[in-house]
Length: 178
Image (cartoon, rainbow, N blue to C red):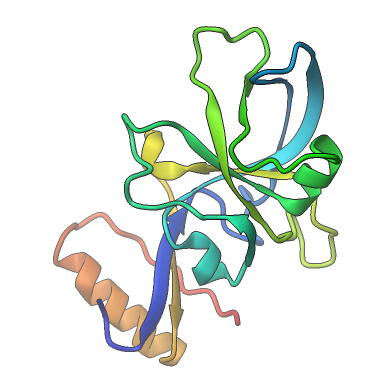
């Protein structure tokens, strides 16, 4: 742990980046229900601590943990808007989803429901969102997200120094924020 760093995580998409709020649409099957539905949603692949680091509250269930990794049961977190649209009369935590017709694909268990996050721009209303555990998939490009009590220059220097100890191919782009 770095002194002054309150939390850190990683994600394929970070707010206000080109990958932020990438839209998807899929026919979704729910375990135990005979019919499927067409869902439109944004998605992101995130690491443990993402919701805390980004200041996104969890309203039900939990966020991702270190044991939500490859080989473990596949976990997803949905946001309140996804829950409102697609599970209006039921608690979604514990429900299992998968792409309809993909019978050879794993079920994704909803482990949590988060508050909304603007999926594309600060002025946008939250859209239905599905978060996948990044540790259950292979990604070589991602954003490191750090929430720090230190000023930006000090934080970037400390992160850069600590990353340099483990890899020579990191590119750090400082972004100011809250």
